[in-house]
Length: 148
Image (cartoon, rainbow, N blue to C red; front, top):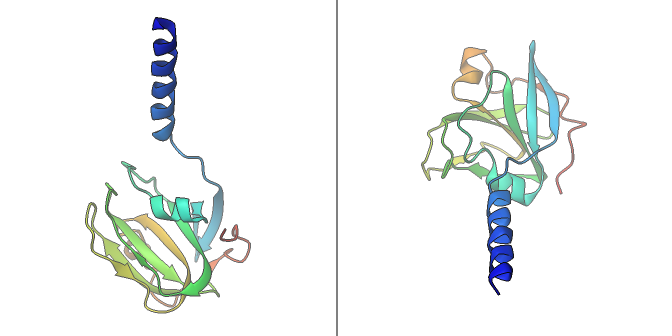
């Protein structure tokens, strides 16, 4: 009986630690003007829902690309997200529809200004610092992993 309880306890600990393990997502290279971005890809419901929650930092030109199944009006929020982010909503042809700054740990929604097929989250102020704005073109989206 004692040995079985130890096995159950160890199994529960392994399951709990696995729930907090860092996810490994596909990475995809994007380009905006002269800037190269290495973006993790959130292409299914689970990865889109989790996004960058729990992250404590986001390096230089790293970001997260959200891929949606169909163009539509989408919104993001920052509940359980620890770092401030900028989000660019992008249409099917790779044109930035709008960019918004998002504060951490809030439930305020940030919506696309048109029918978006993608959203790209970067560190707060990244787009402004690089002089990237609405109407700019993001290259290499045509071969991004498809939404699942």
